[in-house]
Each structure stands twice: as structure tokens, then as C-alpha cells.
Length: 65
Image (cartoon, rainbow, N blue to C red; front, side, top):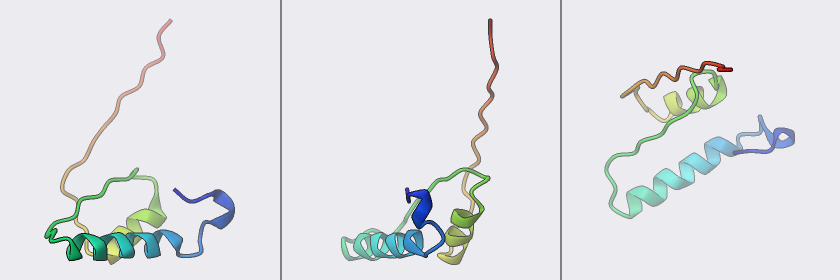
């Protein structure tokens, strides 16, 4: 994660780019990622890197008591 004061500077994209290059250098041929559906900036980065939706998770919450 990035501290709020430093968001919007491209740090997440740089970090993801570096990790993908390291994974490729280590012989990986697939990469998986996950994030909240409401995190539009990260979704845009994932789209830019060519990620496709492979699964969707739904969580249900209920207050009891």
C-alpha cells in the first residue's frame, strides 16, 4: 500500500512493473493480482498491464445482536 500523502504519484505502477520484471526474470509465466472493486486507480493500473478479470469475490456482512 501507499501512504495517503504519497498517492497519485505513480508509485504503485512502478512497484508493480518492478515485481513483474523480477517474476519474469525468475521464470514465471503468469501473474495474478487482486484488489477491491472500488479501487479505480489500481484497477486502471492492472488494466494497463493487461490483467483480465479471472474471478469475482462477493462478501456478505451482517450486524448481529
